[in-house]
Length: 528
Image (tube, rainbow, N blue to C red; front, side):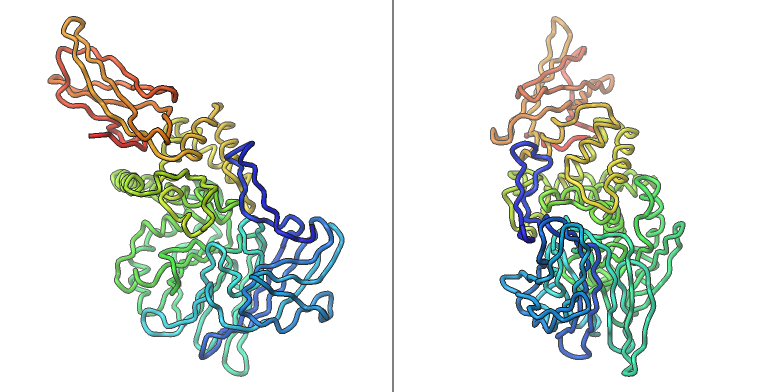
């Protein structure tokens, strides 16, 4: 198909494996080498991106995403300069380098220009010049040519030339520093495992590196502007190595050669770039940054980075996991109240949002930035919390580990998580995944009770009163009733077909108080 984008829609057959993003099935990019020169003044960069790819089908050419604003100086491949170097139009670059299925080809694009997005060269919060890449979701093409989509992961190496006195950090291991006659330096980094393009970044400026405790063979460091180094090490990153240790024991071995926590001057509060997490500088300057964002972004190294959603519409596999496994760290160290508070906050934020009217896997949403919503974060976290409660801790964490091991350094869809969880729990969970991920809303319950003097019983009646468009939910709701002599608990079960369910409790009189889901185990609202 000559590398043209293919739109795959499998929603009719399996909504948990739906793919609606454009992909290019004829090419498989294996490696990027990104050579970038950051200027002493101004914002214009010079770059050379070498792409190694396998011809997966057809015969070529290579199609990459690239901003039209850049000037392509030349393209070289096979030891020669191509006479028809590249055609860049509407954000697409076509390189006339042809091959047969199975061939591995290499091409280098030399270019210059000023990034409109994706790479920020500007003064940092302390007034000093810096440069930081910020690719999510598909903004990498604003500073280098590549396949700007999570489905095609690749290894990467970097040669970042920066002004004298600067340091540069990127994905993977350090691979040396060259000092030029001019005094400028070239910092080399390389990752030997594939990562998604949206996490291929570098950061550069006048920075200080503070080593933290290593976890096994993984070095954990903090990169900050010099003014903020003491705060970072003594404050939000104090337990950063413990977080790596917890996720390594709970999920699987740390997937990368190192983990650098980097203060940055970019768009997002935290960005989970593989092995080089970027955090917004404002939280450092205000001394307001906390541990919760560190736990969230660290969890992303396993979920989102090592196991990457194949399609943006399965973003909850990244953000929902990080939003749940972030709080899980605090539960693991005995801070149960903090865990519960974080989950309660996630629930309340979701219930207060307009996102409740859309499903988590929202195939109708094509603005990727709008997918950064409370469905993919907070509802995704609660889906995992309820799944854990449904199947039990043992099956849940075994399922998570199996899902991670099968998808490590690759991609996944929601159907892959379902398969892992069904295998470890021995239960059919399709209804649960469909209910919470492919439908909008949540259960809204109205509760009443009636005491029968003759039978000495209390009947608890629970009705689902959420909008009809959300359907009815299959749930088992814990209800606690307080009597003069203490509390009694009873489950009220819905089959998913009926809006009303009830349960009976023996009692000597009507309850003094009724609490629905007192342990806060379900994502629901009680109607007042």
